[in-house]
Length: 201
Image (tube, rainbow, N blue to C red; front, side, top):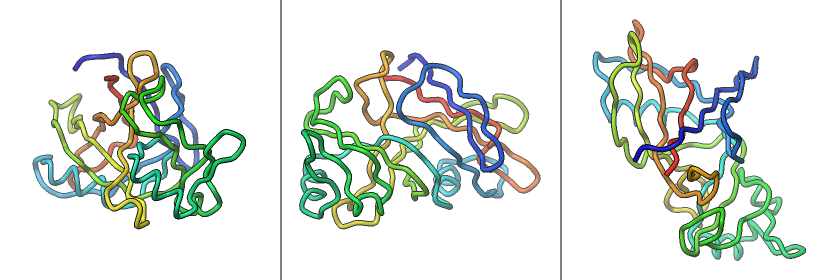
């Protein structure tokens, strides 16, 4: 569905590139993948490239009610001064800050879902490659992909979906992310010079 596009630039270890558009409390820090040979960019190649190595992110993910309750029992977060704060144990799994109130709220429209940030290097899982679009320029294509964070803990048997906001910067829910890929002599790779686009829902 067409909508406002939130535009971010990559940040590498050596430089920070400009952040443009409205700011939401999620950001990609870096994602530079390996190449994948072949003349055509297929859905399976997109999945392989994205899942090839951990990705450094600071991004909100969605917890289901059972996942949240399991995390409480496992000591990943606890109530403190009216908030549900991530514990030291939770931080070892890359969770950060506080866990949001259950939806629907102004931050998430999904009933009983809660949002929490992850920070650091995490493995990602491709839920669905919804489209591979025409070339932007020579050797470059856009894809639209739904992604989740793979957290190595019994509470999270399935990946935690990354969320994107609506046109007002609220009501976050899982959605497709536009990611650029570039072809060179070695095949297809993630395009570090391309911005990621979060199409609002």
